[in-house]
Image 1 (cartoon, helix red, strand yellow):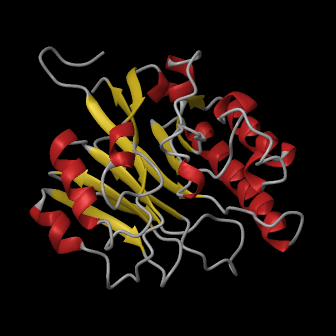
Image 2 (cartoon, helix red, strand yellow):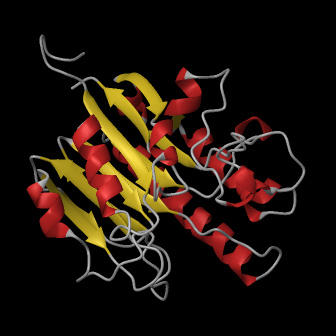
Length: 265
């Protein structure tokens, strides 16, 4: 339980879709919601081009793994410096894509995840997606075994069930909804990870992504791609979860909205 009078810890994940291009959007959201921990994905910035100074001025320490033009992940901590523990997902020494970063913050081990999209499928990109998710499952099993409070948060590029996408057949061949990808996500839940948003909101889809094309935002034609998975010891402290949908409607917005949880300190 939280200490008497202490506010819950707020942890969010946000695929920012180019951190420098959308820096004003990010800073406005940080100022409005003041999350304690933030996992960012799709930085689309090199290591040197990450806007560390602007985030420090906003009150956030950061660790990140950048990559030119694509990918990139970060972890921010309000009023603190995350303690970096890992900059790559283990299991493939040749994989140089910036898709995973891990750090200790406020007594929690935090993994920021940007899983491969996998399109077009079938093909090498989908094969890589499934192999990457298999490596994630192996690492996640080790974290469960260590019994540390842990969250794996980010853009998994998986729509877990048909309930997590608007009624449509237009995505049927997409890598995001394939049975193999959904099975990979389900394996994480079978290990004991808790899907925080679905656990607290079993009857509402809570979309986190709306494509720029075909007025999908205006039509609420969304998908739930961004997930916060909690280890058992952290799941016991879960108080609330949601999506800051309004952020998607701002001028120049990312095609994702931040998803968040609140946990007892």
